Image (cartoon, rainbow, N blue to C red; front, side, top):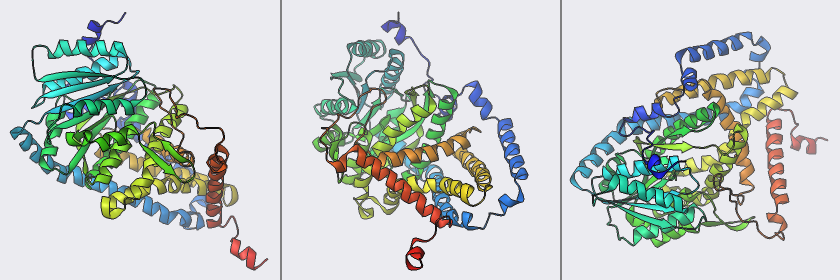
Length: 533
């Protein structure tokens, strides 16, 4: 039987190690290291070269034809956009952020703002909860000022565990305080709202900070010292988020997939950090100015967010509290920055053992949160949020379709133009996705030879999931809590029915494929048929 005492003594996370070591430590199994070795990469290169050498001349003869011309300009745009993000990320991390870091460190050495660490815990096993709160209390003890840890929890067992950890680690000192907020298991939004109100009752100062930490996120010991100074430097900074790595409790493919996802996130966040408006404030760990989380409007937005959709009507958000807080700050004109030299480790438990099923479930939650907030963020306009930020948000909507163009054209050309089209397309994917993989070496010390395949999976499967969700924005589900958005009345209007969602989805895909088929001259021009029967 696992006791509270045995859990307190359980230690399996390195504290106070360099950022690079944390990134290397996460997911560093023997099989993963093998796929990241030089020999594995050499084998991949040789295999692709052999494949290219075996392609018949007829396949290469398609280059320069209608097949390539159709996707050529689109590919230049998509890859140009990716290169732009890559360059911006390097500029931010190598040129801009080091100056921000020096200024923030100097200010935190002069002032010691108070900090509040709000941790939400629900249906997470005790071993992980122990690690999370142990890291939180150690970060609190290492902070330059006083710290209040607010534990927003549901179950009595978690309350006993957290209090026992507090007594064990923070006894005989008055620097760290503990506040336990018990709520019903009604969701993370309620947990955050109750926690925010508990913090507001303590009347924090203008320069105090609040870190919102998920119940499976392990923060570094110097979290407050390395983040709070940014708020002292610029009163317009409303929030920040940090780099993430994962410890995946699942099969090897999940480990590779999560590692790839966080490596891509590091590049995108760094690029958006140059505009001082990141595209999300992750629920795993985001730090806010205390005056913001105490604002009744902010609390209400997180607790009871909703949108009015032209077809689906009004529906509340079940998931996506991080998008609600992000939109409130974006609309209010605050800066949201990225701190790339602070790493939070998340303990990931895939919802199922089947990779495709788990990926679908997670993508429905991730992309649904993004798409539900995307339209209202676009409506703010480039004048309010900045042209690059506005265009990046717009690109989230366009990329779900443009990412499918290459695959769809390749399939159409294979069946109706030339059977070698698929082989040429496969060679392009193997080559281009490997180059993208190598670009991630700017974000991580090692990359896996499996990344090209996972990159392509994310592109095609992810785009199909985004298109699916676009027509079903009211469908929401937590992967851990197993709760879903309450079903509405069966007498829903036809325009908002499941049938209409499926009909519009099918019609859009058909129009998309017809346009591409016309572009490669598989379908005749409709106008020509009308004028010259």
